[in-house]
Amino acid sequence: MTAQKTESPRGAARVRKPWKKKTPIEVVLEQADKLRQEIADGEAGLKEKRRQLQKLEEARKIFEA
Image: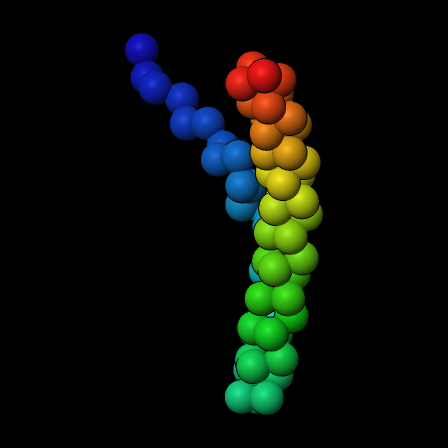
């Protein structure tokens, strides 16, 4: 019995995009965009956590009464 090779999930015919060198300005702008997106995502999560905390504080007041 011989072991059969299976093709990798990536595939051999996959073509990569050509590498394009970025200028320092492009790199900084891209980093700023990424950071802006992370902050926006973090704020959305923060709002949800604030709502949860408010509900828990209200429940705490009921238990203390």
